[in-house]
Length: 69
View 1 (cartoon, one colour):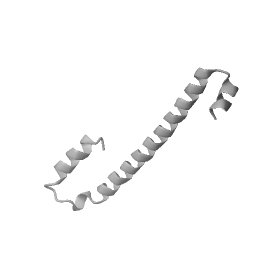
View 2 (cartoon, rainbow, N blue to C red; view 1 turned 135 degrees about the vertical axis):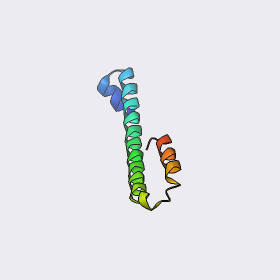
View 3 (tube, rainbow, N blue to C red; view 1 turned 30 degrees about the vertical axis):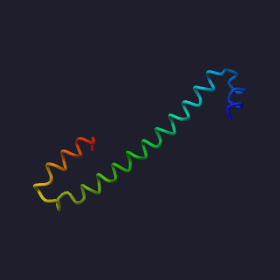
View 4 (cartoon, rainbow, N blue to C red; view 1 turned 60 degrees about the vertical axis):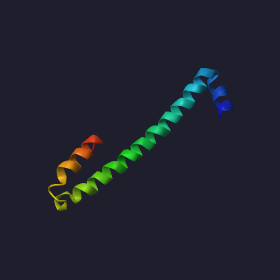
């Protein structure tokens, strides 16, 4: 693969940039997938929010805020 990139770009630095970009895209894709799972988990929690004991809700809310949820 790297040889094909070198041949196509005819420039070593472009090959490195292309590789880094691919790695970044893979990382971002995984990050987006993980965030989607967190969002679904949060929605499930919200479905049961009203059935949680009222005295527990402030602590749960605080912990979720610390996670950015």
